[in-house]
Length: 359
Ligand code: PLP
Image (tube, rainbow, N blue to C red):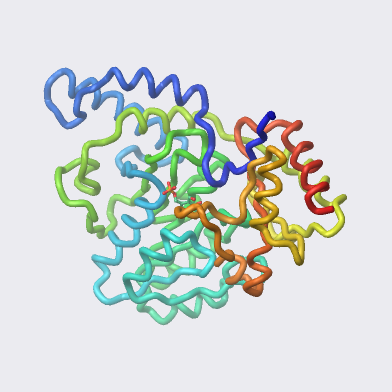
């Protein structure tokens, strides 16, 4: 059976350009920190990749800190700022990814309320930062379960007006949207290669140079002393190659939405909110999301229920619960996410299968 993969928000297949660049980079075996020729060849390739990534994001190359992915970027941002913030608070919303929630809860947390679309309430955020004891606001660019885009620019202005910094988890948008950390006002911004056709286990944190920032990994002076450990050169090279071209799935998303509207009983979560063109969550009230994922899988289609859980088991979505859905309703979601190799035929196949499964 031909499989249809529509779970790109969980991870993506490797783009051919990334694979080719990685295979070539594997022959460059030197340690980028070594002074000899082999080391310098590796350093040159690392610097080229850093520059290429920085150019896409419109920042200086020195601001890029390579990490093992989005989870480490969030832990580094939150741990790095909060370790220097001495007793001040971190503000997060309940719709954030578990890596942000987990990293933040080691500190004193203030929760930012969200509306029924899962968008942070800016008036509430203003009151929170106006108290003057918040060091860091964390706000994801787009939600990984619903695709809803957050008002990061407005949040940055509020945070900065009251002496707080902003960390943006842009794992679901870099490679898909034209993300520019400075236009957003992000002091720190994290992303991950495997969400845009790059390899797994590599990502980066973009950090402002003047920031009071405590490294979280102790060891060598790699990444300008901000993240110790020998860089994963082939992975970094693959990430830069994958980021060379933005993924545009807006026409496919429009076709998907139009098709879903024709299926009785299917509702789109946060339909009125502005979302990314590659992530959509639907609900069929009264139907368990996990059962639908299994039925779709048997029909040859890979979709998911909210986020991919590390244990392979799925629980009711904390994102939907934060949006006001009940425990049962929060278990009824089904996420369809598109990527660089998604075709019109894939969209038609998921719509046909869903029609059968719902019926
Ligand atoms: N943040 C968001 C919004 C995500 O969707 C993910 C991955 O699911 C992560 C962070 C974690 O990224 P990584 O898998 O690279 O650790």
